[in-house]
Each structure stands twice: as C-alpha cells, then as structure tokens.
Length: 281
Image (cartoon, rainbow, N blue to C red; front, side, top):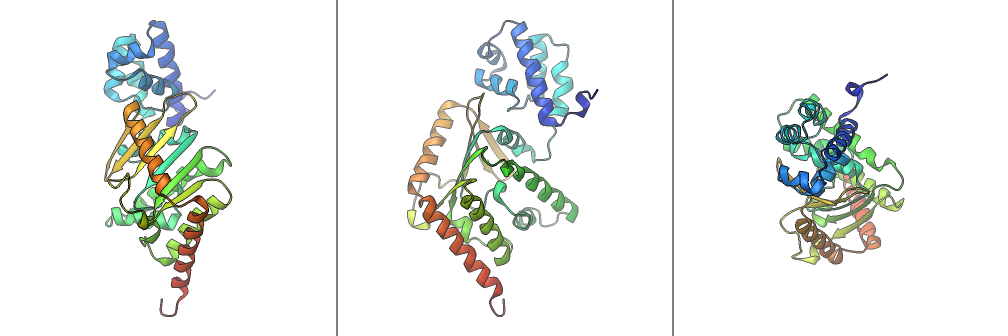
C-alpha cells in the first residue's frame, strides 16, 4: 500500500490539515483559540486544516508545542511545502488550484493561467535573460501545467479584467501576440471564462498601482493576492479582502462589457496576425 511518501505536496497538505484538525479537537481548542496562540486568525487555522494554506516552519514548531504532537508537523511540513513555483507565489498557486472562483485584474500582461507556451517563454526570458534554456523550459512547463486548471468545463469560475496595456504590449512578436489573444478569445467564446477589457479611455481607475487576484473556496474564507517583482502577499484579512473586492468591482464597472471586450481582443489579434504576414515583416 502506498504511504505518505507517494503523495504529491498538495495531497500531503490535505493529509496534514486533517491531522491538524484532529489534534486541535483532541486538545479541545477552537480554530480561534488555536489561532490566538499562533498569532493568526481562526480562519487562517481553518485554511491550514483545509489544505489551502501552508503550515510554515516556525508555525509547525509552535503547533507541535501547543498540541503536543511529538514533532509531527515539523517532520511533515517540509515535504508538504515543496513547490515548482517561485516561493513568493507558491502558496497563491496552491490556493488557486482548489478555488471555486477566481477573479483577477491584470495591468500589464495576459494572466499566467491564460498564456500560451510562446508567450510564457517570452515573459520568462525577459525576467531572466541569462538563464539556461533548460531553466526556461522548466518554467514554461510548470506554467502550462498550472493552466490545466481550466480543463474542467465549469470550475473554477474565472473572471478576468485585462488592462488594454496587456493587449497592446508586444510580448515576443506579433505572431506570439496573435496566438495568445486568440487563446483568450477562444476561452471566452466557449464560455469557460468571463473577460473584460479596461480601455485606455477609462483614464484613472481603482487599481493604478497594480494587479490583484481574489479567490473563493467551498470550505474556507476568501483570499486576496497582490504581487510585485519577486514578492507577493496572500491575505485572508476580511478588511483587506473586502477592499480588494470593492477595487475589483470598480474595475469591472469601468471596463467594456464582455461582448465589447471580446470584439476588441479579436480585432487586436487580427491586427497582429496581419502584421505578421505583412510584406517585409
């Protein structure tokens, strides 16, 4: 029979989360009471128990002390925290994989979930221009693996607001852009996602300082994620999540309708395709 060593990191986190819940209940502690001893919210404890949040190394030490678990959490959390994703994004990617709804605003690029291999490669080469080819190949493969999240025909619900900059900034070359935008349009046309474009004509808007992602779950409070170069912040703080939700709602209000957005995306993709085939291109 396969043992825990055969589990992938996400499955291992679910197993550890279940053990955490059992240990907490044996200790007669509520999620809120345990959270107070860990200096986190009760909802954060619930997310660790559900496997949507990592148990970080220092927290594993405290859990073993509080729950008298004989080093169980320290021993098991290192393997559970291994990830193919960059450290600043790993926890968000893991949460994304179990979310029932993802609502995202992207200010500069086509979101990772929607990228084609050629587009992703151009992005990674821009980030790491001196990286060996095998490193870039691995990064692209990981991003494409993450995109399998959209293979399910209905879950998660995905709603993306794209700044017009993401359509106009040439990543790679016109051929790469034509294929990338065609993929976005195809996903929208088969109703796998809702996409809106925030046009330049909208002027100043509610998220001029960057992108954001909101994730909702069946059995855990919502999370929001904001990202900067090599940095990311994932939070379940109700006030911050509510503020980010309002920001997202304001962006949707300023954006083109889904029908108008799809027409613009397809028009820009067609322009790139014509540019690719233009004489002398």
